[in-house]
Every structure is written in C-alpha cells, then in structure tokens.
Amino acid sequence: MATRIDPDVKFIREMQAAGGESLKKCYQCATCSVICPLSPEESPFPRKEMVWAQWGMKDKLVNDIDIWLCHNCGECSDYCPRGAKPADLLAALRNTAYTSLARPAVLGKWMSSARYLPILFIIPAILFLIVWAATTGLTIPEGEIIFAKVFPTLAAIDPIFILVTIFVIFTFIYSVGRMLSSFREAGFVPGENSPSLLSSLGGVIKDQVLTHVKFKDCETNQDRYPGHLFVFYGFIALAVVTGIIAAAYWGDKLFDVGFTTPLALWNPVKILANLGGIALIVGLVYMTRSRLNQDPKMTVNSYFDWYLLGVIWVVVVTGFLAQIFRLADAASLAYTIYYLHLVTVFMLFAYLPWSKLAHLVYRTVALAYARQIGRAGFRE
Ligand code: SF4
Ligand code: SF4
Picture (spheres, rainbow, N blue to C red):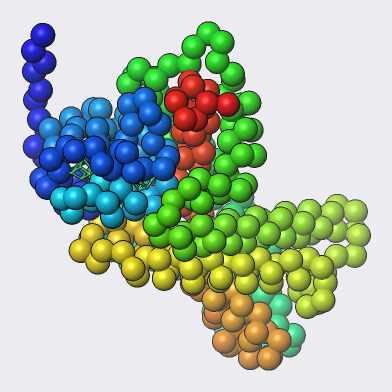
C-alpha cells in the first residue's frame, strides 16, 4: 500500500539550521544505529530519525521518545561513513523540545539565540538592583560584610527564589505533561501489566541517574562521564546546603535556635558547600574541554551548550570570589560580586525549563516512560 508523505520543508531547513546540517549526506546505511551503544534492537535510533528528518516528517520527530534515550556521546557521528552527524540532529531535536515544550513560548525564543541574552540578563539585574536600592540606596554598607544587609533573606531573597521555584515546578508539570501526551500520540502506550510511571522513575533514578552508567557505555568523548558526574553531585551538595541553611534560618526565626550567617569556614555545612563548588569546577573543566573538541560549525547547538556552561561558570566563580572578598574585607568587590552571583543564579534556575539543563527532568521522565512501556533495551 502506498504511503503519501508531505515533507515539511520549513522544518527540514530549521533542523539544518539547528545543527542537523549534515542531513543531505545520509544514505541510510544504518551504521549509526548499529554502532550506538544505547540503541535498542527493536526500532533502533538514530538512522530512522535521519530518514524522518530528510523527509521532513516533523510529527514523527517531535513525538519521538528516542531523542531522550540518546546521551549525545557522538559515537554514531564518528563512525558515519558519509560524514553525516546524526548525534547533532538528535541534539538539535532536543533543543527544539526545550524551547517549545514549556510556556510562555517567548522564553523559549529568548533562550534560543545569543541575540536575546541581554534581555535574560537585564530582568534579574534590574530586580536585584531594586532590592539593593531599597535596602542601602545602592551604597556599600559600613562594618562587617554581611550580604543580608544589602540582600535581606526574609524580605527579598527568599520570596524571590520561592516564587522562582514555584514557577519552575509548575512549568515542568505542564511541559512534562505535554511531552508524555506526545509519546502517547506517537503510539508509545503502557500495557495493562506495565509498572507504574512512579516505580519506573524510581528505578531509573537508582540505576541510571545516580550512577550516570549510560555515559560509560560510550567509548567516544569519555570526558562527558566524569564531567556530568562531578557537575551532578556538585549541584546535589549545593542543594543540600541550601536546604540545611533554609531550615536553620527558619528554625531560628520560629524557635530562636541561635543560627547566624555567615558560617565559619570550618563549619561542616560550609565545608560541604565548598566541596560542592569544587566538584562543579572540576566537572565544568571536563565539560568545557569536551565542548571545545566538538565541531565548531554547529551554531544553534553551540549556543545552547555555551549558554549553560557560561552561566554555571559565572555562578561558581562569583560564589567563590564573593566569599574570598568577604574574608579579605574588600566590601565593594564582595557586595558587587555577590550581586552578580544572585543575577546568574536567577538566570540558571528561573530559565531552567527552556535551557539544556532541562534534560535532567525531560530525559529522566522519558527514560522512566521507556522503562514503563518496555521499550526494548530499557525494560526493568
Ligand atoms: S547517518 Fe551515516 S551511518 Fe547513519 S544511516 Fe546515515 S549515512 Fe549511515
Ligand atoms: S550520540 Fe551516542 S547515544 Fe546518541 S545516537 Fe549517537 S551513538 Fe547513540
């Protein structure tokens, strides 16, 4: 029976522009699918995605669960006899998902190009300048350097970041819901005896996310495994520190437990914070080196990577510098650097659902869904 295909030419051009420039070179030999260490035997990737993209089959691609099963090691691109880059195509498709799944869509547009970077910066820059103006009239306070004198926890920092957290959580609930609906539309439906999504999620977090074991399956680009692992555990350490400090702060407010900041350098919580920061730097060095070794011709893919790497670098460096200048009693530098730190922390978390860091949520849920539906190779 003949199947009529209406290629979406605009979409093909978008994919080419977004990093899948090598689409035309593919002659569908399937070497990439054979070589991919993560591709299941049944309906393997990424050859079928190359074919769909060549034919402009947008619906198939945007609903494709397999773009999230790929861990972007680049092995398929290295072995392609035609010099095509299937890994770039899958990365381009994920980038399209980051900008299109979440709402408001305008944030996706702003996150997709360096042209809009000033807007993304100006929003938190003005917000924290207003806080600074309201507390000390944009002046540097006298006496011991305590960041809360300029950026008070109770009146400004907590309300801002609690609102950011609520905004990000609701954005992810909405966008993950859309992603799961798109999988179901594509025919990926759990069977009657399938495990629940929640139990599959627990299995994926235990077996894959905490160990990053799938990265070890890739022989190409080995730096990505330690890089991802250090960054992941660096963030976990800092999240634990933030949780402890928030609990102690509110405990003090409610029960007067005698908690004060800044913490001494030898305080276990401070030690954990500094270890987390060091882990982030080590991971960032690995990831930056790995990114520098990639094809510089990829334009949009590069921007997604560099935006995230750049923001995390600035968050970590300003975090350490603010601490160093505080200990050195250099008030102007300490407060200014801390201001920049808050601005970039805001950029990292408030825009998270539209950035590459969103893969932490989307890929984890997609892997859990793949396990739930028994996608070959991802079965429990
Ligand atoms: S991308 Fe390369 S390896 Fe994969 S099917 Fe096309 S030509 Fe073959
Ligand atoms: S980049 Fe790696 S994981 Fe992704 S399709 Fe290619 S070989 Fe497979």
